Length: 133
Image 1 (spheres, rainbow, N blue to C red):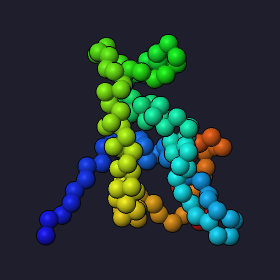
Image 2: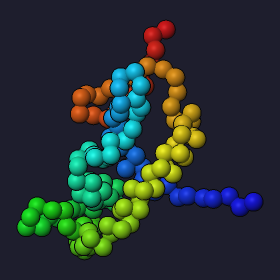
Image 3: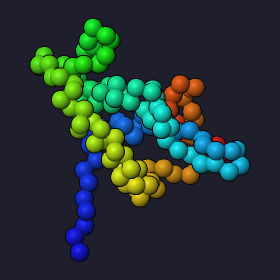
Image 4: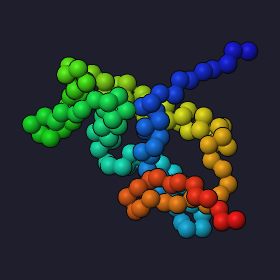
Protein backbone atom coordinates (compact mmCIF):
# COMPACT_ATOMS: atom_id res chain seq x y z
CA UNK A 1 0.00 0.00 0.00
CA UNK A 2 1.53 3.30 -1.12
CA UNK A 3 1.34 6.27 1.19
CA UNK A 4 0.39 9.66 -0.17
CA UNK A 5 2.74 12.49 0.67
CA UNK A 6 2.36 16.25 0.68
CA UNK A 7 5.02 18.92 1.07
CA UNK A 8 4.00 21.80 3.33
CA UNK A 9 5.78 24.96 2.15
CA UNK A 10 6.55 28.28 3.80
CA UNK A 11 3.75 29.71 1.67
CA UNK A 12 1.28 27.11 2.99
CA UNK A 13 2.24 28.00 6.56
CA UNK A 14 1.85 31.71 5.80
CA UNK A 15 -1.62 31.04 4.36
CA UNK A 16 -2.53 29.01 7.43
CA UNK A 17 -1.53 31.87 9.73
CA UNK A 18 -3.70 34.30 7.75
CA UNK A 19 -6.88 32.20 7.62
CA UNK A 20 -9.88 34.22 8.74
CA UNK A 21 -12.36 32.20 10.83
CA UNK A 22 -16.00 33.08 11.44
CA UNK A 23 -19.03 31.55 13.17
CA UNK A 24 -21.78 30.44 10.79
CA UNK A 25 -25.36 29.73 11.74
CA UNK A 26 -27.23 30.36 14.95
CA UNK A 27 -25.49 30.88 18.31
CA UNK A 28 -26.61 27.46 19.53
CA UNK A 29 -26.50 25.52 16.26
CA UNK A 30 -23.68 26.69 14.06
CA UNK A 31 -20.07 25.93 13.31
CA UNK A 32 -16.67 27.52 12.93
CA UNK A 33 -15.68 28.00 9.29
CA UNK A 34 -13.12 29.77 7.17
CA UNK A 35 -14.80 32.96 5.96
CA UNK A 36 -15.68 32.07 2.34
CA UNK A 37 -15.87 35.71 1.25
CA UNK A 38 -12.60 36.77 2.91
CA UNK A 39 -10.54 33.65 3.72
CA UNK A 40 -7.29 35.60 4.18
CA UNK A 41 -8.72 38.86 5.51
CA UNK A 42 -10.08 40.77 2.52
CA UNK A 43 -12.61 40.04 -0.19
CA UNK A 44 -9.86 40.35 -2.86
CA UNK A 45 -8.60 36.80 -2.40
CA UNK A 46 -6.14 36.92 -5.30
CA UNK A 47 -4.54 40.10 -3.94
CA UNK A 48 -4.27 38.43 -0.53
CA UNK A 49 -2.67 35.33 -2.10
CA UNK A 50 -0.15 37.49 -3.97
CA UNK A 51 0.67 39.51 -0.84
CA UNK A 52 1.11 36.42 1.34
CA UNK A 53 3.23 34.72 -1.34
CA UNK A 54 5.48 37.76 -1.62
CA UNK A 55 5.93 37.89 2.16
CA UNK A 56 6.68 34.16 2.36
CA UNK A 57 9.29 34.40 -0.43
CA UNK A 58 10.86 37.64 0.75
CA UNK A 59 9.72 39.49 -2.39
CA UNK A 60 8.42 43.03 -2.70
CA UNK A 61 5.19 43.76 -4.55
CA UNK A 62 4.64 46.35 -7.24
CA UNK A 63 1.24 47.75 -8.13
CA UNK A 64 0.06 48.75 -11.57
CA UNK A 65 -1.57 52.07 -12.54
CA UNK A 66 -4.92 50.81 -11.12
CA UNK A 67 -3.40 49.97 -7.74
CA UNK A 68 -3.53 46.21 -8.37
CA UNK A 69 -0.69 44.00 -7.18
CA UNK A 70 0.98 43.13 -10.46
CA UNK A 71 4.63 42.14 -10.02
CA UNK A 72 7.02 40.49 -7.59
CA UNK A 73 10.42 42.09 -7.08
CA UNK A 74 13.05 39.54 -6.10
CA UNK A 75 15.88 40.44 -3.71
CA UNK A 76 18.31 40.63 -6.67
CA UNK A 77 16.05 43.20 -8.38
CA UNK A 78 14.54 40.89 -11.02
CA UNK A 79 10.83 41.54 -11.61
CA UNK A 80 8.33 38.72 -12.17
CA UNK A 81 4.79 39.14 -13.51
CA UNK A 82 2.45 38.09 -10.69
CA UNK A 83 -0.10 36.75 -13.19
CA UNK A 84 2.37 34.02 -14.14
CA UNK A 85 2.04 32.65 -10.59
CA UNK A 86 -1.73 32.92 -10.12
CA UNK A 87 -2.48 29.30 -11.06
CA UNK A 88 0.09 28.10 -8.49
CA UNK A 89 -1.31 30.48 -5.85
CA UNK A 90 -4.87 29.19 -6.37
CA UNK A 91 -3.56 25.60 -6.12
CA UNK A 92 -2.04 26.38 -2.73
CA UNK A 93 -5.35 27.93 -1.68
CA UNK A 94 -7.17 24.69 -2.59
CA UNK A 95 -4.48 22.67 -0.79
CA UNK A 96 -5.35 24.35 2.52
CA UNK A 97 -7.75 21.45 3.17
CA UNK A 98 -4.77 19.09 3.20
CA UNK A 99 -2.66 21.52 5.26
CA UNK A 100 -5.47 21.76 7.84
CA UNK A 101 -5.75 17.96 7.95
CA UNK A 102 -1.99 17.70 8.56
CA UNK A 103 -2.21 20.36 11.26
CA UNK A 104 -5.11 18.56 12.94
CA UNK A 105 -3.22 15.26 12.85
CA UNK A 106 -0.16 16.85 14.47
CA UNK A 107 -1.84 19.43 16.66
CA UNK A 108 -0.93 17.97 20.03
CA UNK A 109 2.75 18.49 19.21
CA UNK A 110 2.26 22.26 18.99
CA UNK A 111 -0.79 23.08 21.09
CA UNK A 112 -0.99 22.19 24.74
CA UNK A 113 -3.58 22.69 27.43
CA UNK A 114 -3.11 25.97 29.26
CA UNK A 115 -3.85 29.68 29.41
CA UNK A 116 -3.19 31.79 26.29
CA UNK A 117 -2.92 35.57 25.92
CA UNK A 118 -4.37 37.34 22.85
CA UNK A 119 -2.22 40.11 21.36
CA UNK A 120 -4.95 42.60 20.50
CA UNK A 121 -8.10 43.06 18.46
CA UNK A 122 -6.37 43.13 15.04
CA UNK A 123 -3.93 40.34 15.89
CA UNK A 124 -4.32 36.64 15.30
CA UNK A 125 -1.48 35.85 17.69
CA UNK A 126 -1.97 33.96 20.93
CA UNK A 127 0.89 33.15 23.30
CA UNK A 128 0.84 30.53 26.04
CA UNK A 129 1.47 32.16 29.39
CA UNK A 130 2.90 30.54 32.48
CA UNK A 131 0.40 29.34 35.05
CA UNK A 132 0.73 30.68 38.58
CA UNK A 133 2.06 28.10 40.99
